[in-house]
Image (tube, rainbow, N blue to C red):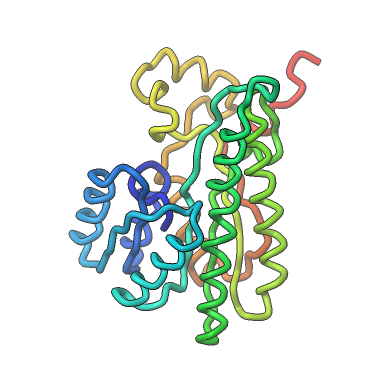
Length: 248
């Protein structure tokens, strides 16, 4: 579970533990939140390891997988939730470093973790499940998010391509595309009801989603009930992505 310290990643880690899985979570900076997530999982009676790891760095990803295998055994479920949020910076004002950091984190990080995961499963001749947390903005554009849209669009296409490559190995690869979810990436909406009201005005269900709703979908895709899903995207956004061309 990359990005398992908070938000969607932490919710997925807890939900997988509820389903009986031992869990490895990674974090980059927030060690305190990662420790809280790990403690929650231990209280459920499952084994857990929390590792600081940077998905942007190949060596860090390889070391992380090695440590997980030594502690819990080779994983057979991978959830990629580590990522950056859009900043609202338009292309003309965007520094190259910002663009590169987004692509490295949200897209290249998914590539690096998936590559190692698939290599290990093929070596052991085992099946497994990959769930990549993308976004409705892989397909629905927004001003000030060119780096984010490009990374998430690439992540979606990567998911579908990898799914075709590993289907014969018994490995499923799917994406979950959330809309507005009340996580630290939407902290203002969590803290202030008026911000939340304004942001949810055009969501058909008239509310933001909860991280646990994304987590439930991840557990489904990782389970035998979701075993015939592959190369698919589950959009969980309260209908927001269908609210196009308003006023046209």
